[in-house]
Image (cartoon, rainbow, N blue to C red; front, side, top):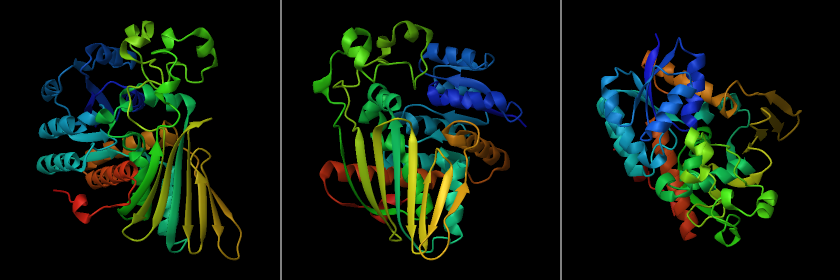
Amino acid sequence: MSIRVGVIGAGMRAYDFARYARKNTDRVTVAAVCDIDGERAREFAAHTGMADAHVHTDIRGLAAEKLDAAIIMVPDAFHREVAEECLAMGLDVLLEKPMALTGDDCRAIIKAQTRSGTVLQMGFVLRAIRFYQQVKKILEQGTLGQVLSMSAAEHLSLDHSASFMRRWHRKRANSGSFLLTKCSHDIDILNWLADSRPAAVASFGGLDVFTHDKQPATHCSVCPAAVKAACPYVFKGAFVHLTAEDTHDPSRNNWDLCVYNDDKDIVDNQVAIIEYENRIRATFSLQLFAKRDQRHLTITGEKGHLHGTLESGKIVISPAGPGEEVTIDATAGPGGHSGGDTASFDAFLDAVRLRAKPIADVRSGLESTVAVNAIDRAMLTGKVVRISRHEYRLD
């Protein structure tokens, strides 16, 4: 049975799903695409080979499409509104991370999902990656004994770093924060591996590189040639999908906005410390300016240490006492996010078809948002923030 879906939001993540759908026509059919920018929606349908998909600029038009599910990939600030609309239509939902900007918005989505009785899977693709699934298995087997601490980091390449300073993510009103929009699934992974919820957090961070005092021009297109020649952040079209008109004039939608612009309120580096309810401690570091995108993970237990790098797929277990180090190969599968996209999309379609529990449910979405919001409060106030169990309530 091919599941009929509507894709809502014709941005980069929608193109990721479209590539998957083209390879799995026996499983899924993109019957409709919806975006408030009609030009973008039409180009999405044409460029992805889905010319038969009906194009809408108003989500209410999807009600007549006889869809089974909705793939929601709109900017974060609209997750609650769009999810509630789709759930009210009785559609199963794959909701891109984060679930929503606030705990209250997450609870509103949960209420709508409970009322509809449909499947809602969070777009926490890291859970579907072989690397993290193997780490989870190692912990469940007790190989490290009692887990004491975890340390994780995400590093972004220069192009990837720059893209967040230009796109809609650069404003907290749209994205919640850099940590929420980019790393809510990293915090979810720590929650998942700890098998617990954050109880107290501290954080430090700031905007220390992409500051306005360094801005030579408003956009790359009008930047002095000598400056542009030496700038590592010149817009190259990465991490966006330009419409035909955008290609001719990338400045019209700020795609080539100078990374040093003053029209942003996000950080460019942040570290967090987390204490879980089960007393596991963790750190997470979001750092830009790397040669390539990378994720690192170290876990310390009473019986040994585990260290791995997602991109290499190698997990090294070092016993605390006698014994040799063991290296496990958890090489990435095919597709984006080290195979996580393909596996996550597969899991969602399986959940829809079998009416099964998704790999990342509404509770995981709420817990990640609540934790990240607390981490950001800690950063802004300079205080340790304690998270009450009441903040994790589902209703």
